[in-house]
Length: 144
Image 1 (tube, one colour):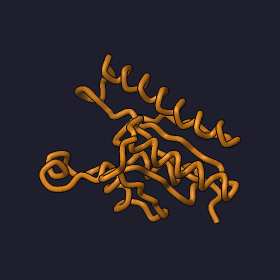
Image 2 (cartoon, rainbow, N blue to C red; image 1 turned 60 degrees about the vertical axis):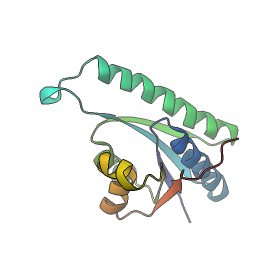
Image 3 (cartoon, rainbow, N blue to C red; image 1 turned 30 degrees about the vertical axis):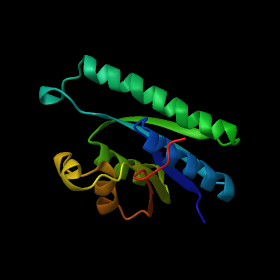
Image 4 (cartoon, rainbow, N blue to C red; image 1 turned 180 degrees about the horizontal axis):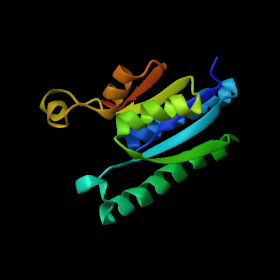
């Protein structure tokens, strides 16, 4: 059913939950997995600065985490670090890599906190892509 799964990550617990779910699906269907971290464009006129370098380092750590999840299940993970606007890059990456499923986490914010953040990257991806997108929620998740 699924041959290639895209797992965007931002290194959060919500992304880790989604990545874990994606790994289970990949193992079940024998699917390839593409892990993606997007470094947001920063600075005037797209100039890169120290903040971007820190994002890239955080991105490498997030991708390491997803790759470790794949290793635990004997899955091969393709790692991708892209630069741009996260939602647009996720949609473009899904098309570029030929995926047939996107698995993303969400914090599940509502009300003012959702409005203040101008919506979520996950919400924008769901609206912009034609590729099936599985959203793994974080609201109400139990802490162990």
